[in-house]
Length: 510
Image (cartoon, rainbow, N blue to C red; front, side, top):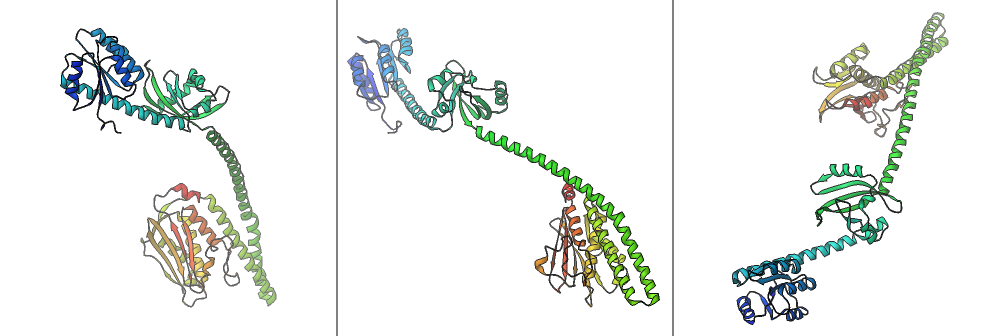
C-alpha cells in the first residue's frame, strides 16, 4: 500500500484515562488512533501491531516516557516518536532525545492544531525513512550483484564497504579487507593525486587510471570512477569507487604499441631502401642519357650517311636496310627521351600557377608544324580555360594528348580534335576529344599503363609512355585522368585538376 494514501496510525500512551479519551475524541476523524494506559500495555500492543507514530506522556508510573521511547527506538525503530511533557521537565526532554531519539516534544496542555501538525510531520518523516530504506535495498541489490568491483572509501583511505566483486578482485574476505587501508593497495600515490586533481567534475572523478597491488603480489591496471556520497560521522568524505579491471586491455594496448613501433621501424627501413632505389634510378637515368643516347644518335647519323651513299650507287637493298636502321634508332632515341622525362617527373616539384590552358594548347599545335594543317582544331577562347597547374608539366600533358589525337586521326579524311574545359564542383576539367580509331571500352583501364599499347606499332608508332606520363603528372597535381572511347568512334581523354586552395602536400604526394 502506498504510505501516502494509508491512514496515519498513532499510538498514544498516558496514565490518565481522561487524556486518552480527549486525544481520541480530538483526532479520531484524522488518524487511526490506538491508546494505552502505561508503557507495559503499550509494549504488549506493539508486539502485534504496526504503527507510524508513538506519542508518550513523560510522567507515568513504573516506566517514564523517555525510558519507554528508548525501548521503542530499539525494537521498533521505524516508528517516529513524540514526547508529551511539561515546561519543568527539561531533563526528561534531554533524556528522550538522547535515549529515545524523539522527533519532537509537545508541552502540556497540548494544542490540538499544533499536535495534529506535529503528528503529520512525524508521519512524513516515517514515509521518507521507508522510501530511503526501499532505495537503499535496491541499491544494495545492485551493489552486491554488480560484476564490477565497488568499494565505499573515505578520504583517509578507510574502506567502509565492499561488494563481492571487490572481494574477488583483491582475493580477501570482507573482514580482512575492511581492516586494510585502500592506500596500501595503491602503487603510486603521487600519480593518483595528480590524476584526481585533473579529472574532477564536480563531485565525480571519472576514469582515473590507477595501478593496484594485491596482497598476493598481483598488479592490476584499473579505471576508477569515484563519486562523493556523503560525509562520515568523523567528517571525512565518503566516496563510492567503481573499479574496472583493464589489465588485459592495457596489455593489449602495449602489444599494439609494440607492433606499431616495429611497423614504424620496418617502414623506416623500407623508406631508406626506396630512397636508395630512387638514387639508383637517378644514376640509371644519367647513364641512359649519356651512355645510351649518344651511341643511338651516332647510329642514326651513320644510317643517314649510309642511305645517301646507297642512293648514289643505286643500291636499293642497302638503302632499304639503312632506312630501317634509321627508323629503329629514331624510335629508340624517342623511347629513351620519354623514359627520362617519365623518371624526372617524380623528382620535380609542382609549381602551381594560374594558366590559360587554351594558350598552352595553341602553342603545342604550332610547334607540331604545318603538316597538321588539314586537322580541324576546336579550342576554348582565350581566357575561358584558366586553371591552376604547373606550366611545364601542363605543356607536357597537352603535348602528349594532342599528339596522340593527331596520330590516331591520321586515317580520317576529315580529322577533328577538340580541346575543352569545364568548371565543376570547384575543380577544373580539361579534355581532348578526337574522331580517330578509338579503342575497346573494356580497355580504358589500360590506357594509362606504362608500355601499354592498344594498337599495333606498325599501324601507329609510339613508345607506350605518353599517357602514363600524363597520369603521373596529374597525380602529382592531386588530380586524376580517365578515358572514354569506342572502336572507330574516336576517344576522349579527361584530366581533372583539384579545386583552388587544395592541399599542396597532397599534390606533391602524387
